[in-house]
Image 1: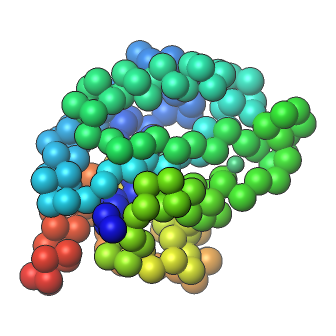
Image 2 (image 1 turned 90 degrees about the vertical axis):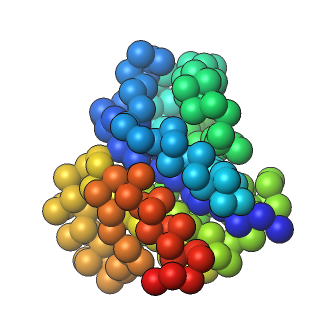
Length: 189
Ligand SMILES: [Mg+2]
Ligand SMILES: [Zn+2]
């Protein structure tokens, strides 16, 4: 069974903007491509798990999102094993409205990826820039890294504290998170 590093998308691998509706709004953060390469070289499956309520909001379609992820794969040398997204929003009407089990902080996307790709959660990691991302690991045997490369960290960390859930580690950005993961997973801590 393969261990995984579950990554949030916006603010973790690409620049945080409110909604990425078009491919030209998807801008990789510095050092992300080589950081993913180091994870893959170490034997991890890299899986992106992302809330994309812009679909429920009608800002872009499933087809638009598929095109954005295709472009992301090209920019990342196809190092991402899979992109899984939640298109829903609980407060909206329509086919993508209403409650779901996949929108982070719920764990549905992680569990779907585990099933789909036969991943082992023990020894796996989750990285994200929002409280919601880190909370998606609650109840699962994942170690978590909160990165400061996206949303304002003060608010997100306050939300985590309010939820009484601490990330295993914090890092400035994904390359630094990968440094930590590779040290942690090789028992050098
Ligand atoms: Mg994010
Ligand atoms: Zn959902």
